[in-house]
Amino acid sequence: MITKLIVRGLLVGLLAGLFAAAFAYTVGEPRIDQAIAIEEAASAAAPAAESHSEAAEPAAHSHDEDEALVSRDGQRFGLFLALGLYGLAVGGLFALVYATLRGRVGPRSEPVLAVTLAAAAFSAIVLIPFLKYPANPPAVGDPETINQRTVLYLVAVLIGILAVAAGTAAYRYAAEREPWLRWLAAGASTLIPVVVAWILLPEINEVPAGFPADLLWNFRIASIGTQAVFWTGIGVLFAFAARRRSTV
Image 1 (cartoon, rainbow, N blue to C red):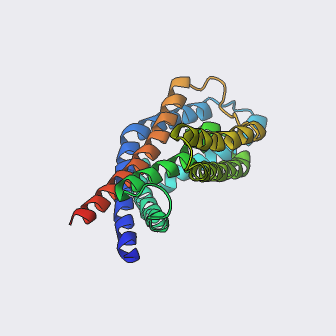
Image 2: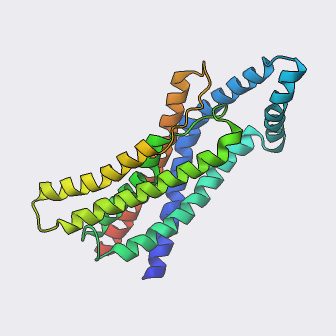
Image 3: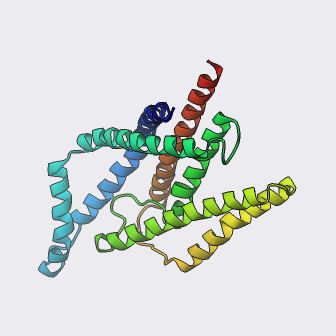
């Protein structure tokens, strides 16, 4: 049974990853092209003085090197490959968590459990961290702070997971209470640690002056939209497979 669930999760994850890649290719790639154009224009307009050119040379050289190594067409193909592999890995893990929770925690209905689990994972792993540290397009962000930003984002993911787990535990603890009280306990247990952590975690704002606000906003919408498509695909496809299995 576990083997069948894992195989199901792998297939569902692969399909969800390809759906997300198609969305990212359609909605996100044009924004990346615009951001790259802005970055190239800024590099071309950099002063030619030696004191300034020495500071600008590493970034320009890195960008040219990246273009030589991987073309934009290669990057677009890599988008589908990367999200497909990501879907396989996440789908397998999703199936293991689903098997662990089934019959123990959450809704008794298997399709409802699949959708609920996907929604919880999206909230914990994607939405909560995104609200504090949203994605940025190329030309936004200091390369020297990438390690700091990576660590802070991983901390935000951990907080999101713990917050959702706390909300779930509070809901189960208040199982004998009125429905409104259960949801209040779950909401408070989820939001309070998130709000406290968001106040304590440092802000990161490296958007350069003059960067188009509409491009930044559209890129972030495309980024969160890609993840929403992925996790919606995981939940809906897994739920469909569970319902089909139960009716066979």
